[in-house]
Length: 277
Image 1 (cartoon, rainbow, N blue to C red):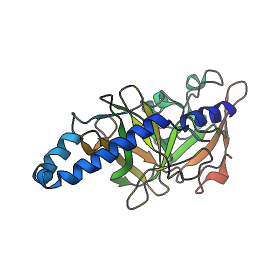
Image 2 (image 1 turned 180 degrees about the vertical axis):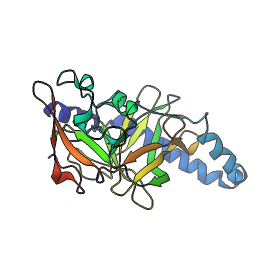
Image 3 (image 1 turned 90 degrees about the vertical axis):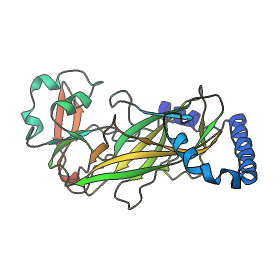
């Protein structure tokens, strides 16, 4: 836990020279906008389209599940439909072989059994600028593109109480207008955070998208300010929306390792959600 907190502190450390550069650029941009507002009015929509397309000064890449450890006490877990596997006791023992360092109920397991990531879903974004001038990240919003009844199945988590490993932003998909709200090391809202990137100064943001009511399909939109103006980029799961389901309609198990992987039924989580810390 100490190592995670140290890493988090480094990630949230202020980079003075870069912030000063970003502020200066924003100030000069505002002056230029005021002088040329009338001349640019007719071309505004064309400019926004260019800044939001492939030529945008910002690159945003979702990291593949299984290539990172999700921040927070629960991490990544998957809800398995009972139509696929009725309970953990019906799993093929071969799927549970391995040591305590490797969770067998991983992304590959989820793909084999049509499982859906449970709430909160961890979506890790890697952001970098195409050029050397800083690009400021202004906001991230979520767009719900589909809702359905939650999966009725089962899930298993191996809980802990670790710290943040990167910038974390919470997204409530049950909200009428979901927006990402950054958190500090203690989990409180952090409204003062300033994020900007260059070609070599790359940032990671982990979106923790939650729902307690449904199975939700959603995409993210990243708003930014670049050298030539403001724009936004839509982020999805390789052409498909991200998908997450609430765990409240499913049976919960705690996953532990003692001479092999063990499942302990947690009835207290039923309908209430997971509680591990």
